[in-house]
Amino acid sequence: MKKRFIYWIALLVLAVLADIFMPSINEGGLIKSILIILGIVGIIIAVVLNSLAGRTLKLYGHKVRTKKFSPPDKFVDIGIYSCMRHPGQFGNIILLISVTILSGKICAVLFGGWLAFLGVLFILFVEEREAIEKFGSEYCEYMKKVKPFSLDFGCIKNAFDIISKKGSV
Image (spheres, helix red, strand yellow):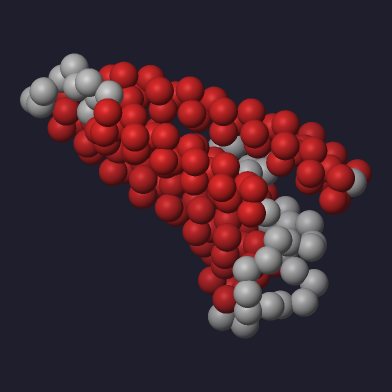
């Protein structure tokens, strides 16, 4: 768990460093304003996805409810997990790209694309393998029905509904 956290933090630090040290090609104007808006919208989407994923796992991913953060010990396929397998990590990828877009530097955005690619590889080759080992055939069936990533806003609304129902109980 700690290694995963360090991996995502390292990618985010690389994105921020790219923003700081890459040369700026566009020194302002309309394109820079559009990139700033896109970056902010992306960060908001990333925070929402991470929040929904974390809250859903906290409410439904444990056989016994705990106060501390811990990895799920129960398979979850409702809420945000009904339409994508990795909403938190997808939020992390969107965050990486959004941070580089926010800089308005073309080279940083291209570098952010490579960081996002590394994030996708990590999810598909590390996270998926661990989930299969942990949840077995149930997860394999889930993989056949649910995409790894999606921005279906109907699903996001459903995720808020699921959380509010369980959270109020």
